[in-house]
Image 1 (spheres, rainbow, N blue to C red):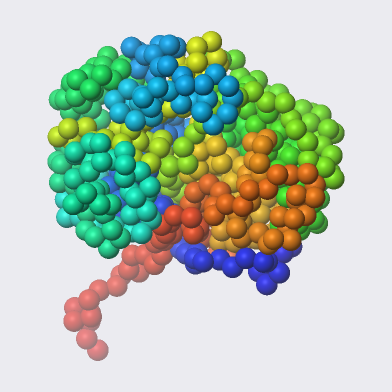
Image 2 (tube, one colour):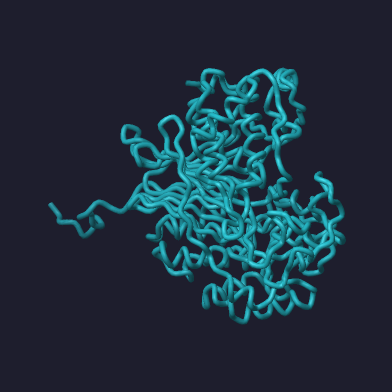
Length: 563
């Protein structure tokens, strides 16, 4: 087992512990919103939905009600379910609705003329978030929508302080934001990116949230809000129609399950590739003494890079909507198939693994992980795809729509080509690890294609290297899908050189993936409570509820019997 003093990196944040509930999100105000629900008698589902609505206000570049995502729930009776609220291609779209700029696999393969699939009205897919959040709350929560949405309304109406992280994201895409007067008024005041420390007020969005509080998801899916949005989209030349909103349905899916060194790993099924490929990679790694090699050793990192390349070589068969593509899930997560792939790994030399073209994904997403004392656990990854989605505000609503159409292949005749009503594919990996049927870890993160590889590494850190939860989420990461190996700056130069000696083409990067949020369920001999951790890659903050109500029979002292 590793000890903190033997690690070559230092954690930048502190974990939180609690006995009655834990909320970990990528913004302190969102975590506080979740805690507010737990303190009011709500459960982890209420807390997660409150945190997500609040994130649409305080992390508007990452998530919104006009986006999509997946939520993995564990219920008090031990059941697991996955709520798929991913976006789908509009009914009016088709395989040739964009003009690709390149037919050659490479960085330009998904690009289209005029960037129509990335920016503007034609980039917007049918949204799933609002419907999924409201349905999940109604089915599994305790509190009414009107209560759960109040923190989001409050922060939109009164404003909040812009963090350096948000300010940097605005600056990164300022040129696109400047094309839309509504979004530039908020984020480019006086023509320059909003600065950290400024107060951001979103009055128009507050009114939209109030309407949703009164009418629920129906305000968008068939109501006046949806009609106004569709009219604006049609005027701007978008594909979305009222029929798309009326036809949209969430999908409840059974999770995929695997095992790793005595732990059961539970994750989302396709159209997410996260659960399938995390299990696949762990199956392959199970044949090696990863812990004995040591965290950050060139030998261990070489194996991680090779299993990532294998996963991406197989990903083309498991990253499509199962309603349109036959996905060989059982083969991909089988121990037998893992043994076949493992046998071909050269422990001393990097290899090329055959792969089709993998669709690109945005790293600009968010995640929340929540648990309560009653046994509800929620790990949920949500997004509007790119930073600020399609990079405009729907007139009169304050809503930033997704640009999920960028995840489809703009070339016809491909597995990921645009098809009406097809759901987008994702690498989202809201995971849980169980032992003897009881949850031990729940975690997830944003990061597009880098999500499931980062989630796998966190599990390896915990299970093989014996890291603390905080160490596991903050530890340096690597990533590759078959070309260059991205290595975070936290790895020493000697490690980079050694990996290059294995034949890997190394690319140093500031970070791989986004801010991970995790919860550890403490064993009985450690207080039977909850530990939460968030990493340095976002504004993540864990908050917990401890204490409790007064002991029965306690009265205010002046009313107590006098002696």
